[in-house]
Image (cartoon, rainbow, N blue to C red; front, side, top):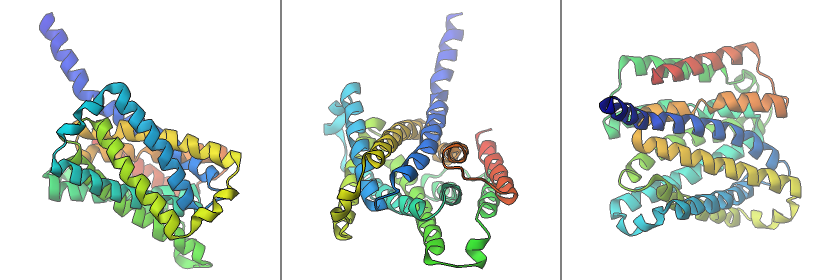
Amino acid sequence: MGCRVSVSCIGDEEKMWLLFACGSAIFAGVTAVLAKIGMQHINSTIATALRTGVVLLFSWLLVLLTGAISGIGAISGKTFLFLILSGCATGASWLCYFQALQLGDVNQVAPIDKFSTILTMLLAFLFLGEALTMQKIICMLLIGTGTFLMLPKHTQAKPQSTTKKGWLFYAILSAVFASLTSILGKVGIQNIDSNLGTAIRTCVVLVMAWVMVFVTGQQHNLGALNRKDLLFLVLSGLTTGLSWMCYYRALQDGLASVVVPIDKLSILVTIAFSSFVLKERLNRRSGIGLGLLTVGTVLLVL
């Protein structure tokens, strides 16, 4: 009887990363809509910088509460380097993602960002030695096809304004940097507490975000921020922090090629939430694309 309990407990512990990955997807899905509302009157670069400040406070508070701060002196040079590189990639991804969100609809931007799943699987195969099985290849095709179908036709046929081109460009860049973030982050948190790693990375993102604010001269527009904008930016920062904590906890124990796709299921939460709050709707073509994307992601976990 004792052996059975022991084996069961070990199995439960090994599966905890799956629960953390699902939690990451839920919080990330809500984040996009909250951030979209919070950026109605200010530039996306300022919004990113303000949100990152909230995430930073949240992440270091968690580090202190869990006692992970004691491990800061044991961080190796290699780990620190990859945490910094991961933070830079995250900062670039965030800046591009929220710029895309400001220019386009949530239902347009979110699917393109999920394309990073395919890039992550390829990079995990090349640099982390994770197997690229036939099942994963089929899933990549499903996710890629689904993403393409969710891309609105008019962005290809009628470039009516630079705004339409702009959101797509930034969304693609966001996906590229997000895939690099996952690989660099996987290497960076192998030998330290995931909460501590997240907090250190967030410091890099915060510096990068505020540098961009001052380089682009957006600091003069801080006065345009109203209470509603600030409230939703703070809420989006909190959900981002929760998503990050779950994500990197899952990434520490699970395969990057599986954790990332689960996290990308946040698109279901995003679209449901944006439909309810922002009244954005999917057409039939996008609905089919969402279905393929979801099936491809779920198959990766089976």
